[in-house]
Amino acid sequence: MRMDAREYSLKNAVYVFKYGFGLGCFAFGLACFSRQHPYATGMISLCLFILATFFLSVVRVRLEGNEIRYRRWFRWHGLKYSEIRECGESWVYGYIRPRTYAIPWGRIYFARPQSPDSLFRWDNEIISTIRTNAHI
Image (cartoon, rainbow, N blue to C red; front, side):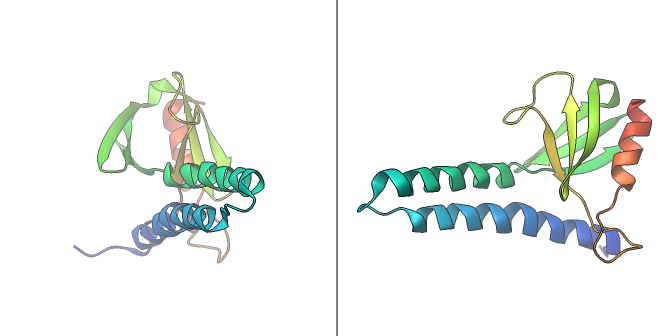
């Protein structure tokens, strides 16, 4: 199966912004901890672990017929467009806020590919498609 440029960019974004940042923050949190100063380094490590948890919770989104499919770890989950309350962008991520609380942050953050018409911008096509289909 051959990937187009958009799919390849999305695959790279998932690897960098999910696994690269997530595992990097986790490893840096482990490396920062010191037994000589357990409280100060423990707080820094805890903050880095929370940040790593955020990065590792980023999902991959696929738009299908009347629902959005998102992949969290190894399993695909479905979310109907009628259940979406808000959709937008936050830094390099897109987010979906469903009508019910989404564990762990209340929103479903997803990776976006780079924009095909600009070198340093992120693609907004998926966000506008979700907003259109969800009527928001």
